[in-house]
Image (cartoon, rainbow, N blue to C red; front, side, top):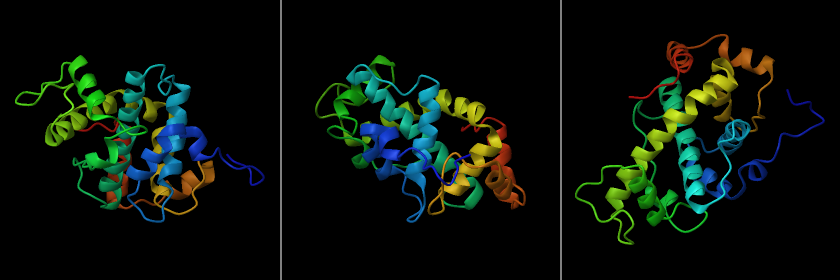
Length: 209
């Protein structure tokens, strides 16, 4: 889609203050184009009205949505490229939780509390001593909740083939998003059995257990 005379939007411009977090968690391939993929996927959420925040609470939800994109990206790579274990998503909370631009643990606790997330045997969700293991559990549950909201939308708006091809392309250096129709065809025409299964998973809605 992008003519050689033009450059895609800069990932930092698209993601704003979430760019630092995106570069921290979208790091599966050392020389890939994952932050650029995240920016492209984020632009789709922007068009759907899911990437704007007027309060700090809403910004916390944006962090969760960005992580939901990361969960999808990691799941696809595990299924299609054997980069990871399908069904497992394990992001170090230290990369995600903290002062701005990361998600403050207190805000994570508040979001969990407002969404009635069961945090039995934990400290008060709003407590500054919000336990690290409890925070990791809350983070995983909240990201899964956002996943169920944003990923089906991503599949619908991008299209299964284009979305799958974009993740494959993101593992390579210098990928430009959105991909041209020619590149999408090249990436999806001769798939391995695992690649075909991953594409069918996306076509089925990219659901996670």
